[in-house]
Length: 266
Image (tube, helix red, strand yellow):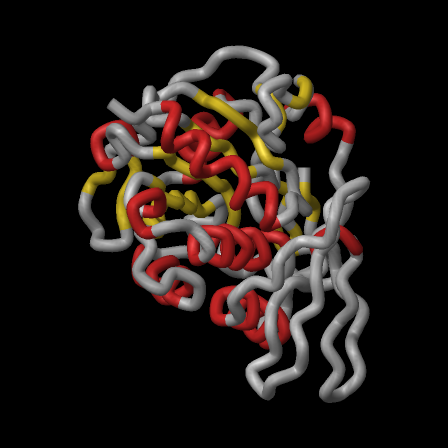
């Protein structure tokens, strides 16, 4: 589980340091022309330099967010939810500990209309994530990584993938707020944003092994929240195929997603 805590105040003009090195956003090119840094996979060769727009948008957004806290480490509960093993077929995600099918969710889309996840992502790979727009770290970083990964895929592969962001802070994340927030990351790849009553969001998340707690105002004033930070990848057959914990490398998504798309091809 990712927990937000009251932050220490950064110096003027200085970006607050990330609390988790593995969530550092590297692998993008600076717009001024600075050479891109590369993200090596543990035990493997350096990753490719990736496109800048989404990753830079996340950094800018995270740096501008105030009154919230940086995300912390995984808790034992989150590690238990991710229990499973790496697939023997070479994919980089984690095999689910138990079989699960894609839920309908029946929440509200950013257009204010009912959204049925099964119907809207039928015959597509669905990447489901529970988070909140006021999260200054893991949530925007994850959306940026998914956008960067999709940008590296062939258009015919990308057409079979949808990213679905479900707000765990519906009291603040109205459909309009979620829509504006996702606009920072989605250059037209098909990101869906969903909201709904917190009790329903929490129940749906927990049914999928993602622990979500209602955001509360801490004693120091900033918003405190705890929510699972993994990405759930549902195959085109509607079954949960892989789980990706926070800090997953962009190159892992680039490697796995075409395989998941091909597995469901007619």
